[in-house]
Image 1 (cartoon, rainbow, N blue to C red):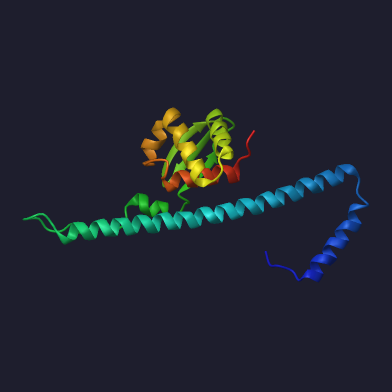
Image 2: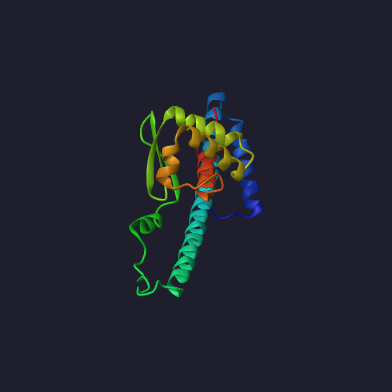
Length: 187
């Protein structure tokens, strides 16, 4: 959204305030809800932008690590064996380029799908509520990742195994925390 000059913004505010005096309480409540939706949507879009940026950073770091490990492996191939040929990006890597590393989709009133770099795991409503409560209780991304890891290790270790989330310091858990707190409100 392009920013307006201050005088245009002041004029718009003045016009809006004049209109507010003419509205009944029900109409004012409706406008308030619409304003809250606009603010929430703006915050959600900013969180999504940060998630995409984090995904790019994760992919960049993973590529650098793969490149470094390939370079190490190629520099000293085992005796009698040729150095491994470069095969390009895997299907999972290619799929990960088009979607954020972590996303949550509500499948129905009682089920949710959490996707982490292409791996999808189903959660029920109660599990999502508990993760949302845990995420909102955290003081930040690192604390949120630790808390989520602790709960997932205890309650849903299959998620950690299937997604390859290595530990509490895994950036994908910090990203999961970010998506949860930016998308869901604590009860």
